[in-house]
Length: 337
Image (cartoon, rainbow, N blue to C red; front, side):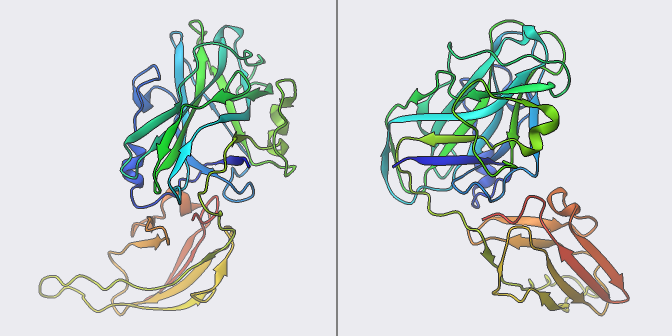
């Protein structure tokens, strides 16, 4: 039985996310994550949950030949100990603006421990092989093409003994065989899968930049069954209030009242649902945080007291009326696990 993963722009990890974000591998050129645009996201087994809102492309300008990381994706934790071996294959949409970009697919795969350290390398960045990205003018390139990851069509994994709680780390990037021209550089595009389909296994299908919103989704498939558990399609949430911290004389330590949760706490919600509630305080809210806490133990700040954080800004609102504040919150990309 195989395991097919899909790329998500949402991290959705556990409480050790800050540690995981600091994982650095040494097999890419450049100076760490600042060298090229960097996306950190998740590998998910469910294709319809938490994917890109439409499409997202990553391009970079390099000044020398080398291997450059664009994106890092982390899986959910393994539920059992397992010897990971076999092969891996996948597809993404890629292109280059300049023929001198000389860009080829690159992928590296690791098993990482819960603290973010490397347990073992399954597949290292490639030094040869593959088909050069299709070239077209524009930013992103006007035409991009289905591309194999790894570039040979499949990669043979080195055996790694993984422990329950470990995660997969997949790094996606490009290999440039010559100093590219200045400009946008090679592009790798991730799509939602507007046709609810996966990219075919070839390097011949092309996609116009104007049609990327409806292009099939990229994927990565292991020849082995890997048990990360099911991806949730809905979530059950609870609502509550943390008590104020007592301070000096004259400070407001009387907790506000939170009411009118909608939907009711304990209800199942879909990733795109919004949550609303009212907060009443006799002195009005002066200093406060709104945050969500997930079953995994991860927490995420929704509002820092002055503004909604970027992941919540587009779909959230606060309406003030005397000592009553009415909140409605929704997360761009959907609620994570």
